[in-house]
Length: 73
Ligand SMILES: [Zn+2]
View (spheres, rainbow, N blue to C red):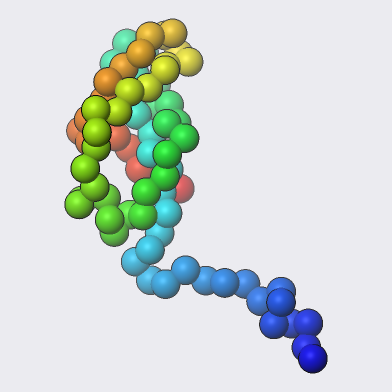
């Protein structure tokens, strides 16, 4: 009956790093978090379905592609 089993940190397997998806605003050049995350190793195979972003920097709605994306921790 060890309580250490309950508090042991769970490490993700190698290669499954979760990244936040940031998109660069074309008007201001600033990065904006989309609120989405992706497993880094799965990003290459990820298909986007016409994603849009309500941009807090310029107030417009941007449609974005993978080329506009920066993956951040
Ligand atoms: Zn913008």
